[in-house]
Amino acid sequence: MPASTDLRFDTGRICLDLLATEGARLSAAPVERLDGTARLDQWLHRTGVLPEREPLTGDTDTLLAEFHALRALLHRIVHTELDGGRASAADLERLNRFAEPGPPALRLERADDGRLHRRLAGPVRPEQLLAAVADDAVRLLGSAERELMRECEGPTCDMVYLDTSRGRRRRWCSAAVCGNRHHVAAHRARKAGQT
Image (cartoon, rainbow, N blue to C red; front, side):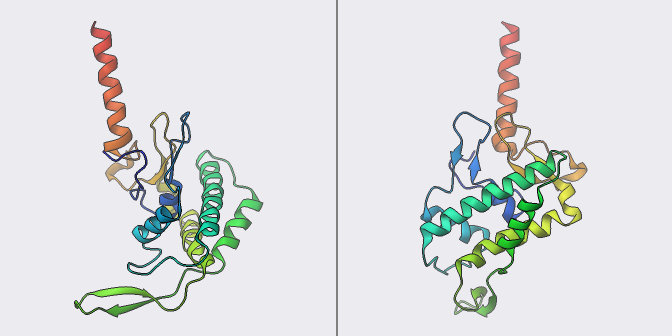
C-alpha cells in the first residue's frame, strides 16, 4: 500500500494525476505530495511531461507555485462538473490560457542502446510544461471520456480517476488504498457488533 505522501499515477490521465498530488483534502490534515521542486521534477518525469533524462531548469520555485495554482483551478473545475454544476466561464478561460502555449515539442531519437527515446526538440519554456497538463484537461473535459470520471468513495478522499473497469463499477481510487481502508473498517465494525 502506498504511503500517504507517495506520488500517485493511477488516475488514468495526467491532469487527474496532478489533482492527486494533494491528497485527503476532506480530512483534517490534507497531504501535500508536491511539496518542493524535487517532487515537481519527479512528477513531471514520471508523467512523461518531461522526457527522461531531460532536466527541469529555470525558476523552479515559481513553476511549482504555478503548478499549485493550476491544480487548484483543475480541482474547482473537475469537482464542480462532477457534482453536476457548471464550471465558471472565468475558470474555463483561465484553463484555456494555461493550455494556450501548447506542450513542449518532442522528437523521437534512437539512443546508443538501440531503443527509441523521446527528447525535447528545443529549449522548453516553463509555461509549456503547464500547458501540457492543461491541454490534457481540455481534451478530457471536452470529450465523451469525461463520462468515465469518478470520485473515490473513500470518506476522506476526493481523488478523481477514470473508471475504465469492466461494467464501470470501480468505487475507489485504489483497491489497495481506499478500498482496503473500507474493507478493514467494515471488518472492524462486524467484529465490534459480535462482542
